Length: 362
Ligand code: MRU
Picture 1 (cartoon, rainbow, N blue to C red):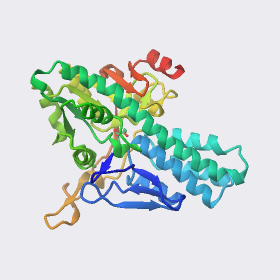
Picture 2: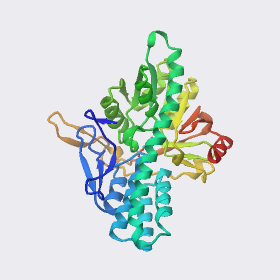
Picture 3: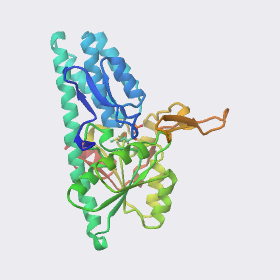
Picture 4: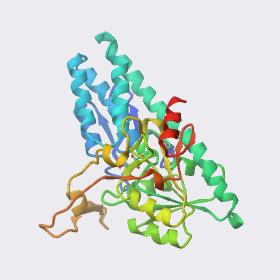
């Protein structure tokens, strides 16, 4: 997708062909700052501090983190230790473990002198695979948007609500939940996006709004609690969100607050779709409520807000009284019964154990 009109991915190999470039997402939307990862610890820090975030991008960054670790030491011990360090960087998105397992499988039983080249090759494939999956999700999801558009009068825009950022910034390129919107827009359909601000880190207000703006897609940022009101007044045609992990029974773990949107959608008969690439499906977790670890992050993310001052400085200010306890649960689980369908790269899949088992064996 585009940054200031120029096509870009969120992660890339630098011209030296070994170090890794990223967009530092902690600086958006106020500044586009690029960062360079040169070792395992850079990759771990970038994931944990959310310079890179979003389930598929976390996986891609971890894959390159393994390359950087192997560059320093290609022994079995170094490989295992890099795997553990990267896996511990964030606990919820299964894409992280998926990508690390792919990397281990590519290099583990190979001679030490071959490992580095094989690792870089597999990491590049993981990135390209993500882009291909997202484009396919975009095509399938755009058909859902087109079906709504066909029922609208006088070309009125399809109103899509999304939560957090599951756009191109959350992936290597193109996004998952926003991919259908990009394809619909390319196809000439009118779409307007309601963007939940997504406290505490404001991925909606900061990232989704920024990337939709770069692509010139109509959008409106709303406070997190607005969606229910909009749905009651017929102002939302459909919801599309991303996911960090889908359980085998169809429960979906995603950014905190997703569940409340699904409840409001169910009460108002608004279709609730989840864009779910196959590496985000964890067939090993039977149900989402008991099986998925929910990341808890530092309380200062809740106690403060960060923004740009009128003279252009980026500052954080405290909004909670000194001494008050804060809790920062980063994700929640939406039960399968509240989900209309999973938009996968192989079409729309019902959020049921049977449909997901069939999807796995396809
Ligand atoms: O904490 P984040 O910003 O990494 O959370 C991101 C989300 O919850 C996304 O919706 C999810 O990772 C899917 S990204 C395609």
